[in-house]
Image 1 (cartoon, rainbow, N blue to C red):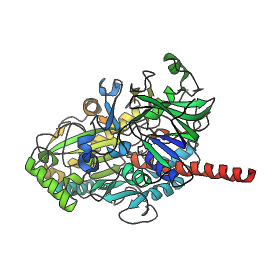
Image 2: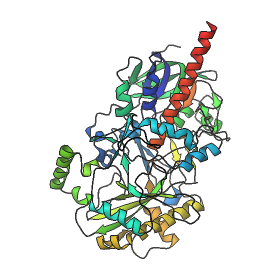
Image 3: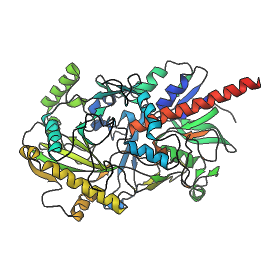
Length: 544
């Protein structure tokens, strides 16, 4: 077989994980890396403006727009799931919120049999990745590539919401990524100066100067090439031409929770019956590939407010937009410095919850869903996101053609506990707006509307308005269970020379936004890979 390129490692996907791997592995000058990205360069100016999230999240030029199967809990609606199709992957299009998850999340990973993934094991990798604006401490680093900064978009509604939460009995928390997650406070963002700190900017840009890194864009992976049970390379299509690259050591899949399992299935690794249905030769039967899909579903309450100074008005006024642009350019502050939401709350909504079971995102504005226009009246909104859904779904190819996006079913709210948590979380959201502070500011409840308070009412509201929060995980789950795909070093079970390094390996979705944890996974994976390199070199030296 002829190969167009050869490298020690081939990384598939230049996203949140792939850029980290490219940086850390090429720090060793003896290691040659080929990085393949199916999308293009991150040259769209709105990628780098924090508030560009709202403009770009469904932009087909820089996102893959996946669509689920009909969702039973959402009245049979299909839901669109955007994922980054550009250098930086979803770190170039996400809401920029930096949340690691709860200590309990990672300790649970360890309890599931994944040695080396407890909180104390992964904290050093969170710290290594981070340059924390507030400085280093036991929980934060100050010399990593990833910039983590305070929000620079003050608004009177932000202050009011924080005060109202405290009136409702929630404590103030200055650091959701510190000693504990619980409480209300301001989200920190992955922003450096005025610009988004994607992994393309923070990890990949510095590595581009190294001669041992080669990057190919518009390179869509078609299949992993195997010699028996060992991955030896990758076939990809670029500019209409099929090319092949040889991996002297390993192929590293970093395409994310939707593309990594799809590529494994296309390569003959996955459920045998599914692969046979499409005439794909089975390299290794692995039933868990594409199973265990999890996602955070969110649902919002919306209140109209008295003062017409919300983002809704900015979105409909050229004068206000001009002022926002002036603030951004001259001071690095104002509405254009916001990510998906500026203010957060992590709360226990039920007495049986040992730790926060719902995450909230407050915005001085309102819309039906990301990608939709802002409402034509002054309003604010609060999104309720149950942290630890039990429901799991699946992802399956629909064709042997890699350009055909797979079929996906997250099975939102399929357990009673998931429904109960969502209802309790939405009731808690409404209670915050019934505090004296919010009552002075708001005029009426727009969503779901006054008088709707039964469990059935709330679930109907979720059915009609609930949406993804873009946190798909677990389709190549790490562990030892029959449906796991990788071991605790992220090596694909039963195969050699092949690892998965992205959010798909999470045994369970973490309690919060998934980008920070994905970066951590890649940081840790780079150490695991380099340890293997060192061991191999030592063995070769001794043999010589």
